Image (cartoon, rainbow, N blue to C red; front, side, top):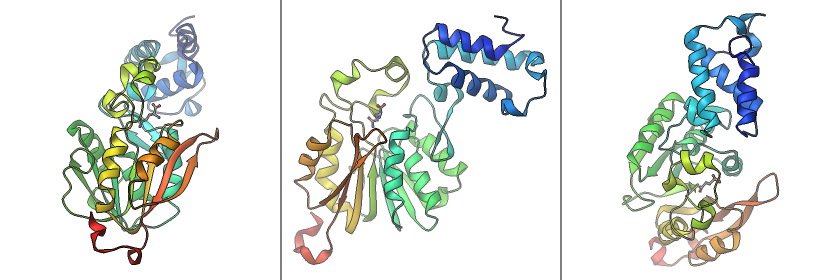
Length: 289
Ligand code: GLN
């Protein structure tokens, strides 16, 4: 197949040979990124007369994808809840699974939102942009992630309503109560991680996926302090691995929160847990502990 005569077909056949399972979608996305426009907007023979630089970049991108680099990591952006987010090697690409959490979060209005382990900032940005009166904070242990999150807050014009904090979970927060606390923490177990797809194992930051041998460390740390930072009647939404429903519920049994519901993905797998802090009346003076 001639690379120059029909770059799209050439790309698709290269990706197919490399065993990539969405060769057409990926080749189209990569070519469109190089062109800076949709293929549907091209004139008849335009594909056959592409600039050398465009072609050279496209060949390089196809080469990367053959080495299993995810499309988002190649082009530096990923769509999430209808918006484009900058990504790089330091952040986990936003995933459709996490949109289940967004759907739940958007059922209410909040004045204050805290996104723990914000990464690219996709959850925080989406919630701030959709609920235009709220303000929020995002934490992350990685300064590199916060740089990306800051860019995304700016691109989507919510940076004036957000604050980023370089810390591990609640560790660096001293004061503050939030109406909504939300997190997609790392939850993959070490044995799952050892068998993970090369797309993830080679190109996604391990710290965002696999925190400890059993994948539960972040939930334990969140459970320890959640009561201190959640307002009365505030809501907690957590992403979980699809086999972790019972075990994470167990961890949160030690908190003062009331379990509200499990969130399921389109395949019917448990992907999120929702909790509520009861109204003040039910508490004694130690409600801040
Ligand atoms: N769902 C993600 C994956 O399988 C994991 C995200 C996470 O650990 N928070 O790649």
